[in-house]
Image (tube, rainbow, N blue to C red; front, side, top):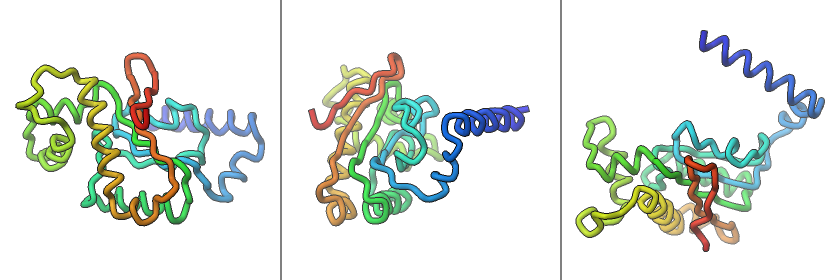
Length: 185
């Protein structure tokens, strides 16, 4: 049943794109030249190309829980390198969101074995729990984005290849759809 739904939606997508531009898929086949490299959370509600209505080919996207940047994350490092060296992106966007499950898990002390390592990375991106007890989840998700901006600025690949590439930190508000810029202000 689910497979049928995916197939039907894909057929509708193909039909609409060919209606809009009969050469759409011929152009896609020629390659990509995205302007943006986007790091976003894996949350199913916050797809970068959907919430910005960007067409295919305009965003090179890397997603993980709570939009984390870690030098040890080979997948992120490879994506960043490819975006900067081979795709020549002009803008890096770090996009967090309100109601982030990864931030909630880190703040609440989730210690599930399968999540422990990753949630530990998220926890390190948040303020000290002992110093800030009365803070909203929205403030925490904003702080997480700002921490990732700092992590990116210190990432060896960014330092080597990111000269002149604009960096934007933003927070997607799931309750309103607004994309709030938090860096630079």
